[in-house]
Length: 286
Image (tube, rainbow, N blue to C red; front, side):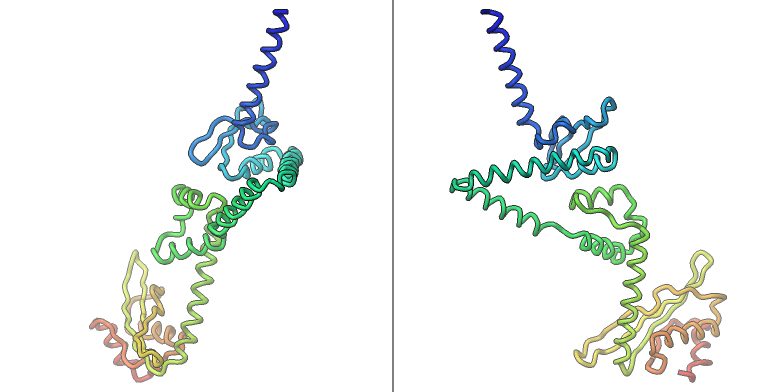
């Protein structure tokens, strides 16, 4: 009789321990694949049972086990079907429970509230295209080096703000910036076609043994009578020394490229001898 009591007590203890384990695991249907370890802040940590005997831990955000699925896809592709079957079975059980309990008004109200919460969550989700556009605007607007997107802290920032999004690659970022620059240049050319008179400023300099020239343009918008300005050549390379003929030829190319060759009223420069001679010799051509 005593032995039966001991046996019964042991069985009850096992059931209690099993129930506690199920409660602690946030996604019980994944228990055959991942053992729940701990929770901290917005993440859970699991031990991958498929990697056994190797000790491998995986983390997942509280709102989705997608990181666990990615681990299976990457490290255990042959077990992906099992993962999908477990997830599908869990969704089916949940649907059945909701259908059976549908007549309960209290539960129905709770389900509706969950749907509203899901809609709000999706509304706050930022798309990958929006993330890419924001990164491009940051790099261009702040004049940051393209390599900033490869810095670990920058990647952590994006992952913290939007865990389900990725950072645009360096190659794609460079291509997108070039495409946007060409698009803005074409729009500027079309806008300048509508202007009858413009003014420009120009200067040249050397840095690290290389020569550059910069040109800005200014005009009055006839429709709004507002002063407008743009940059034609922020830093264009010049070959050779800063002689008057080289400056004149480079400016002539820039003016022709934007279609303003015969629209320039004055051009503002410094009083360098090379600029003075360039305009005194070649100004009659404009």
